[in-house]
Length: 160
Image 1 (spheres, helix red, strand yellow):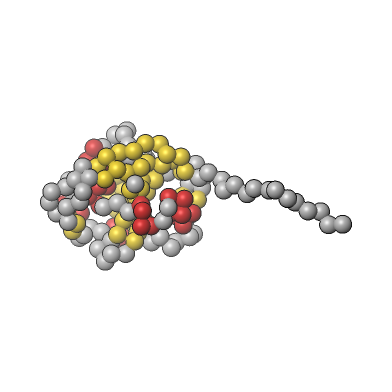
Image 2 (spheres, one colour):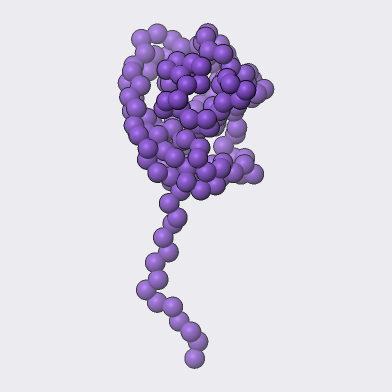
């Protein structure tokens, strides 16, 4: 007689913990990514896909800040947050947070942060903000790069 398992529930492991919410105020003028005044370094992807982006004014938004509890690839993170359509932030909203911590002070941004944006061409991308040698470092990843696993402790920012 074969061994049968019944009444078993498979529970997805919790990978994100809500840390806080932050309100980013509305903007009343266009935002141009190349016009910011924060000390930073960046990868080629940021220069190619974001530096010349111009955004129209945006409404006030509430961003949720999550702590990544276990290593995970981006598709799992996006799935747990409810999908691409629900989590995108504007570059202006990211820079609002950066202006609050221009010298990498402690605050809402941690040492490793992920945002979800659309680039110059309207393509969905991952915008990473980390601290490198005492200044902000920006990088852009495509969302389909499943070879990248983000480690425990990254802060994930998503629109509500």
